[in-house]
Image 1 (cartoon, one colour):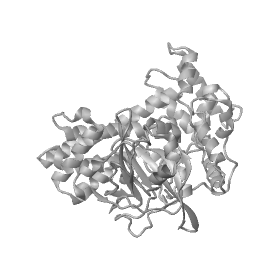
Image 2: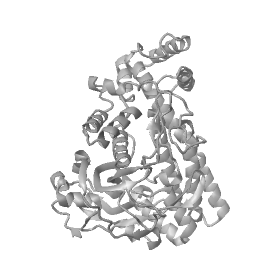
Image 3: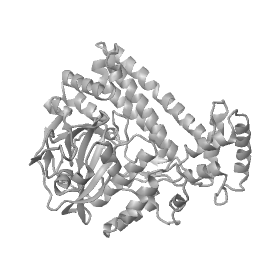
Image 4: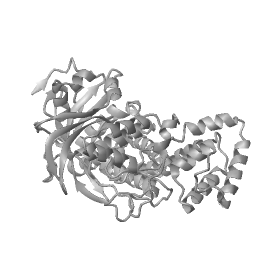
Length: 488
């Protein structure tokens, strides 16, 4: 059934459907029994030009549940491949439906995707459904990342299906509506390079340029410019992750977007005490995607992207390879400069001095030695509140603190300016793992108030309000390490 989108504000198109048919499969809907709206992102809905009251109506919820399409919608599942923990495999949207692309009042084009909407040709034997807990988890974390100022897909809604799904146990089913600049991935290009013609690969690259990087479409070698733009975006993104202690958990190539947004919040989490080896994912036995490895893994993924573009970079393959290698070789420098600049800001430092990197590394080493909380250490530096810090009184930190103060004294900027820079660079809180679990456990019992309060305090992490203090507190000590799972 198709519904007119006028009253609700839907203004859908589907430019992706104009690509060669090998890049997607058109879908029929997999309706659910009793869809019920659990949470709606009013702020995001308004920015998309949507009518909140209409979205909450039976027809609106039917669209968010995948029971009903809209005028302009062309439901499809995207084909893609990917290196999962280093091993190449064919993939695709196994439980996702792309309704289409919303044309917003700001003249933006964003994907509207339903996650957990049922089987597709890429489901590989799965049921195509999702459980309520993981969908709420993605909602919480993705919205927290947005509030932190980090490019990310966003969550418009979560709808329960009225049906149970079987995992290890019986769980309530749910559908997340995800909003993204697009769902083009490194894995999309890997799929094209492996199973499509060069002409189809070129169609995909041209589509990507038009959608995400129109400013370089007219460049002499626009495909090299595409590669460079993606490298630049990912260098900035991964630096942002590192600066807030975010661990993605499953940095497969199908989880790296061409737009530079964070995507797929499966076994992700935020680091408590500083340790580059931190891993939360239950399936990352070897620590491939540990916090400290994320910059290197991003470079590896980008190299895979560069390989897919070789036929387009130059007709001479040796020259194409050299162009790709030269572009990729810049990634780590780009990442490092973004990260160092961000760390300077976290320490209230405005301008570069050669010794700054040593000062930064010294602090991190001290934090690792004493198992100091990453987020709260920078908060303590911001407000000079060391009472509860494990670093307080240690000889190493005392010496480092003197060096830092001396470094700040050499700046022309005032102490108040440094303080303001630190306030805007060091969040008052992150979505602490135990707080997220607390919200999800309450939701399991039908109490969504805990989650709503958590979302409220996470919505402005740089406000540094008193009501955020309790959410910055560390969890009680536990004998078992925190683990996350690929439930999303």
